[in-house]
Image (cartoon, rainbow, N blue to C red):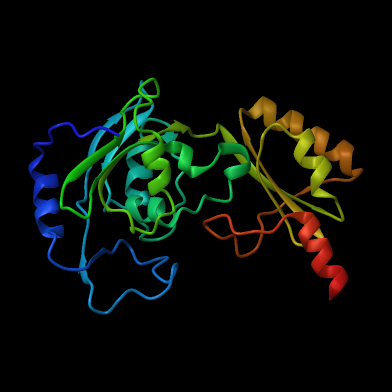
Length: 256
């Protein structure tokens, strides 16, 4: 963890608003406000700064204020053919996505959202602006701190801004449904599988990547299942990953 001098007036103003005199909570889009239980009614509710500070497609990083919506960030990155691993839902903010700590349903292929957070600047309980992590992958100083803040529900500090790692938008992506297939062998055999969802009867697989690679995996999917996968997205697709392992579902089914 480092504490370099921070002279950004936006962050200094946010630190002043957080203060040190009373309880405070930062509200984002309110999309997962219930996670962690009710907020103390006595707590003062504030908002984090908003705005995209800098996007560097060549370095595959984006510097953004914590109160900015994930949708706005992804919209700006789309112009460069990039995105992030942060979970996106209507009105969800970058700081909120990090504080709640949920990964999107594409975690299987695109990794944990926690690993996309390179740097966090936040206000601690003493009202100080603290920097953890660094703007480049080579700078690993304090990387444990951003990871610790991920999923902390704001209990360790009030996030002001972050630098996140970006990734290319897949050339193609399609959902395919196969009925009666075991998702275990499919997961191991399909390199382009970005997500795999199973409800006990049907398996939905999101193939994403270069067109030629997705086509190869679709052929593998046909060979493994002995049928023709139906191009069909899963119903009621959640914006974040919230699931059980197949073996747990089988156990629950056996006990029913």
